[in-house]
Amino acid sequence: MCEYCSKHKRKKWFLDEENYKEALLEDKKRQNVLQKLGGYSHEFYLRDNTGILYNYQTPLLKDVIRYLANKSLKNEYAGQIVTLEDALKVVELSDNHVLFECACRKLVGDKTDYVCMNFGPMRDIIKTKNPKEKIIEIDTHEAKTILKEANAKGLYHEVYFAKAPFPTTLCNCDRKYCLAYKDRFVYGVDKILLKGHEVAVVQPGKCTGCKKCLGRCQFGSVLFDDTTEKAFIDTTKCFGCGLCEKTCPANAIKLVNRNDTENSKGRW
Image 1 (spheres, one colour):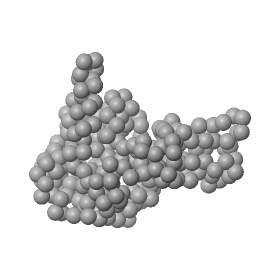
Image 2: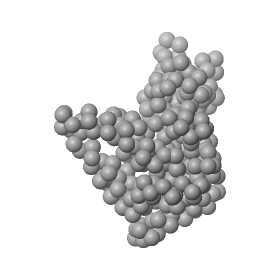
Image 3: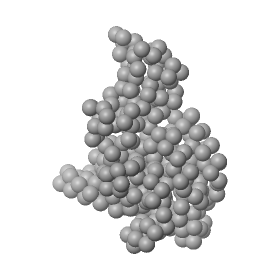
Image 4: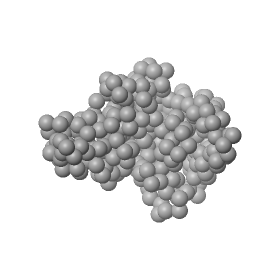
């Protein structure tokens, strides 16, 4: 299991009903993170997420910044890739679902889209601290429908916490926009977006070589062998989002536990 699960009952932290309880809101550090998220909206991402990494361009500072960022994120705002099935379970465990404008798309100047959702205390915090921020209240059925539609479009799912292990947000994202993706792959802040608990593997006997899975992976893990005319997956790069599995018409791809696969074990 990942570090958050190991610390919190060795269960997927975002599927543990204990982590959704209001008692966790008594933590002052967590309250501070929630207030920043709900009060500053996309300015929070610009200032706390992107702004600090500007200094990463200075050679003497980048190693220090990367180290400090990775060390501190467990007490701040960070997340993990999840499958569609687990994202749907998160919706079932949470309440007060609201859609909000994607901060990542907004910050790069693209057309804003309501593809991400907050839940739990975030709805009321936004209404109180940032009443001008547009949010759309949705029920559980609507939330699940949005997740399924996002998955069909090729968006991967991320669940975020406000000081681990308190889940607050589900994002349906794309590497073109995702700030967490950029923080990890450009700046080396791995803790901002952990890999998922599963990895995808191809069953060669079922693969027809149609290549439909190749265009679905946003992490560069799905490859094609011209000799065997079969797809294969580099599990060291796989984030376990499950997009390739969902698109395979031959059901040749399956998800397995990350720690049961030698090359990906412990690689978060």
